[in-house]
Length: 145
View 1 (tube, rainbow, N blue to C red):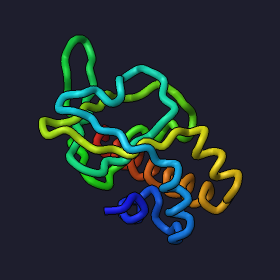
View 2 (view 1 turned 90 degrees about the horizontal axis):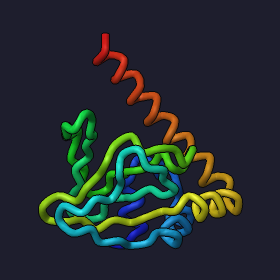
View 3 (view 1 turned 120 degrees about the vertical axis):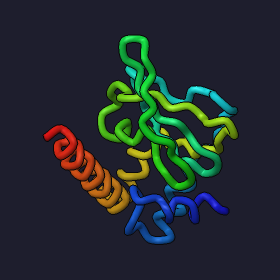
View 4 (view 1 turned 180 degrees about the vertical axis):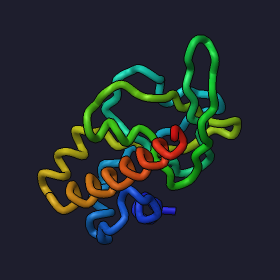
């Protein structure tokens, strides 16, 4: 599967046209993660996000010496997307599962340059990101209530 075809399946990039997906694909860097390899580490700053192309990753948090698994993500799902907004601290750690994973990395500086060249890409991605964050906040608040 081509990078553009994979990106078309990613909710974060919904409503981008073929040309825009190809532009986005041009800044993706393929990365292989072996079984158990840490891809993102909780409480570290980040400037990149990843899209799972093959295999799966385990998202977990560590608190008071205990590890709590949150979710396993697979093909077409995104990790580290908040780095596109603020390059803040990672809220969780992510590691490749037992079969490893192939990922596509997007660095925030390359993403910003692409958005300056094509404002529509930036608008659509940031809108999709805002919708995703709003959904997660609403559902988190329902879980707390």
